Image (spheres, rainbow, N blue to C red):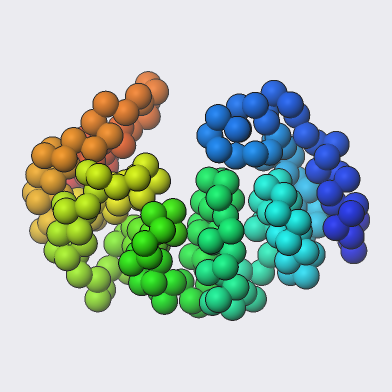
Length: 222
């Protein structure tokens, strides 16, 4: 299927649909029933096809959009195109993959990070915070870390779920990566108690920031 058509790809995705998987995914807000390993196998076969990716995205089908994000060329999207795509991404998995697989590799990532973080839509803002977490870890130069902690301290407790989760990740990352801000990050986490009671499976690290920070710091040897 070197030059696959949208119709052919959509037909193949339909054959991969599993009702039980759809039921499980829908509990998380993801309206598709395709096993992601099988989806990745389709993407591997199709290889990079930017035009097909855009056409699959335009179907507004969640499985097709996930596939589009796997076969697209991240740097080929314009800034406004990525902004529109994010605002259309209501399925959490599509939102996550768009940010992690495409926007993070885009030359427009920093401009979008700044714009999205300040957006009144909490789902859009959560993408801005996800990009901020990436910068805290990989390119913190120029970031106002105390200012980020001020914002988290003031807004995280009452933020909607996805925005709260993204802010909490930034808080933890600051505490893990930046020893000079660790005590304050731990203090904010302890006082706000966000995700303190989150059910965490055995052998997984709790998303509660103080536990998360201390666990990761100890793994890195202090």
